[in-house]
Length: 111
Image 1 (cartoon, rainbow, N blue to C red):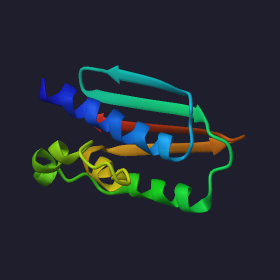
Image 2: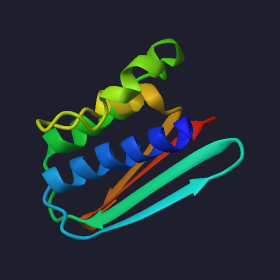
Image 3: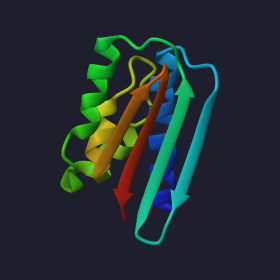
Image 4: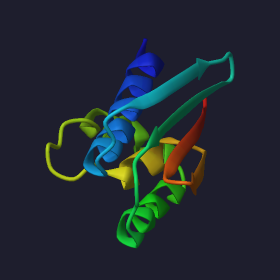
């Protein structure tokens, strides 16, 4: 149950980023495997500024298993700017693809 709650919070944070960039329609795919959760979100979002793409570097924050149990509960609670650094601390890897005004973020989280 706790893993599914973490997945929901991760999706929420990522969708918040997309809404902040002006996306109106998103495709969300969640694969909850036995050993890994893969979340992929893609949307046609128009021109993304360099500051927004730079913010995605926060997803490459090393996973912090020691503090994850405390911080995961904070995800989704901030109505200000979405905390991609927090997402980065909860995942193992992120792949970001932006071309033709289409942004796809895929994150991988081992169980």
